[in-house]
Length: 419
Image 1 (cartoon, rainbow, N blue to C red):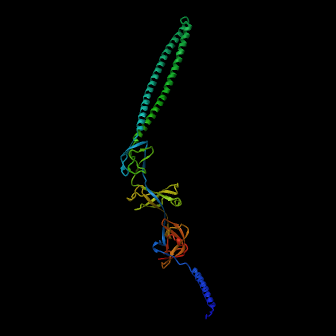
Image 2: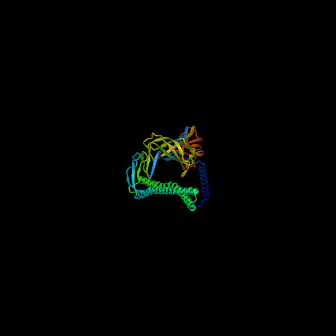
Image 3: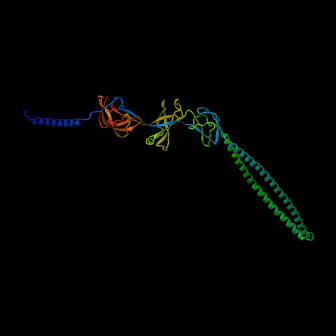
């Protein structure tokens, strides 16, 4: 016989337990969410730390540059030509007059011959002009002398006839007296005209000769110019120094044009550094400031001697004059880094420059706790900046150890743990 049992109390108990479990789970979840986030762990070996110091901060501005000679002479081609022989190569020492290379150009030889031929013709014409003018002058002087003789004879005839006529009119006819007077006056007029012609001839003689002499001088200058062009085909060193390599080296058989660079001579011992500074930092640089030039193997102290007034591609070029006793690593066209010392701040807090920090701005840093196990986020106000260091105005004390690298991946945390 089956016994009927009552199951309702058991069902009520089970429902109560389920509800209690759900309420407990919700409470636990809320409690866990209310707890502060656990500090993430950062490997101590990969973080960059520095200690806050108090003392002197030397502000510097850095820029790349190149060593260039102070005294250099660029030689360009005077005329077009073909390189026949390269006598001296870059790196060799030269003295004034040494042959660097030889070129050829048949057109220059032909133009010189033509100019010399024209000069010879002009000189011959000048000699002929002088001879012709002298001959014409002599002929004119002879004509004047002959007319003066005739005029003197006619005057004597007239005077004789006049005396005879005055003594006895029957001795000389009136018509003969008048004719002798007319002959005398006509010859006198012709003498005056020929004398004037002689004066004009003598006054223009110098001008004609001078014009021809000017033509000769012009042709002589043309000959000298072509001689210089021909001589320039043999390229010689104008000063003593060392041949420096060109950006585009020459080769034998190469055709060069007028004005093209064919050689460069530098005077050894005097170099300067041309440093390119960002246009935003250039206003802080003045002539006379000290600068450190890093050649990768040596550091040279120099002085800012010139600041380019123009901005090129966002940079300003400054010249740093270097001393004469340079190390062996310093040579022309060497790439260097320049640090210009612009200021010296005494008794200030400073640290190594964080990669994300800007001058005169605030930024957050992680500072190491006294036990060295954790790093806590703090707000820091920075002041003046340098190449590798930065001034601290607020937020840190001497001896504090801070993390300098970019910690943006932990922006959601105010505390990290170092392991």
